Image 1 (cartoon, helix red, strand yellow):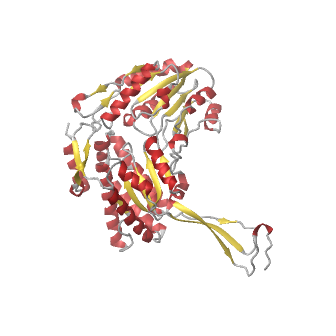
Image 2 (cartoon, helix red, strand yellow):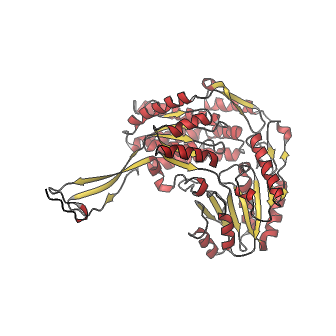
Image 3 (cartoon, rainbow, N blue to C red):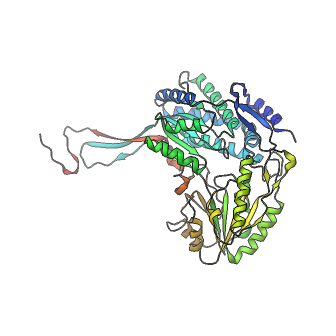
Length: 510
């Protein structure tokens, strides 16, 4: 196969992107598919990061006054550039994050869809007229830009998370500062490059509209992200990643009474009831559990299956797991690519060792395809039969591990097992029973932000909610109200009478 560095050069050429301005010795980026070094980059210092935030704040002061539909035009142009460069950017995602080709392309398509979504919202940034008990008055809510929006993204969705936040933040009148994962900075550099091209095109028609510093990129590790969390200039901080990271971010933002939008770990579950379509369930389970090598926030980690159908379903899954194609993510027919790095592999092995110690029987989980590179970490997806839901199942591991437990009672028993973990992102049930489906989606059902019926643990579709409370952090944007997370609400009262009546019957005669 063609080595990843050569592939990268072809991608950079297609994007008309020169990395020389970012070269340095602070970060070494390896391709998960073969372990080849893609680039060595310089990091920003905390002092540089603070200067970037100040620059973004100045940009916001001008951008907030640009009419929202005009701001939407910039995002529309970004979507157009993403369409034209979908193939190259998708390949870059595959090279840097290890996603199979269709998933890399799919993530860019999500970016495009988000831009379309945000452009539509740019004409909906309005409030309501509020009824008042006082005559000769009108009360209304209005919405205004917040300021600088900081974005911290994770390696498993290296570009889509940014697009969600950036597109909405920009149409809402905010400036943006992005700190991508130190494992996937090249895709971020490419996105920033495309946005700058969109700005240049926009400026040709509307000179002077886009202020300098409207969108900026910070390369670096935890110390750079800490600047965004602590800075009072960052009005909204959107962070995607581990629960550990989310806790640190949430505390820092809360200390200054800022606004945090968090979408953290998953550890998601699916219930298979006696009435389930097992063929449909098997397909959904496989994609949800092993797609992106089990490294999505919505990855299926726990399978709760009724004892009456468990043998039939698990026999089917075992056949699939033994035959599933693991290998080069850029090769046609591959369904499972590599883990992001050695640390991910080691974490997976520790989890499997603990599962065995807790009575689990493990199928798969071993390293494969060492021929593709000493620094490439491919694994056979692991199917783990557990005697009960134990401690290892209550902890998220970003790897293709599917724990299976059986239940013998009613659906309420299965729901209780599903809910008995600290994470609350996504969930699913497979059933032909309307009662089971409705119970699962009710207040007494799944406690996750996403509760699906007869489909896997997805949830990031455009216009839908990422959802999630508990340790997941409070969720991300939701539907037509997505823009409200990036704006502040004000209430205005206008008196057009010649009197000054007071509310609640108060008398105050002077």
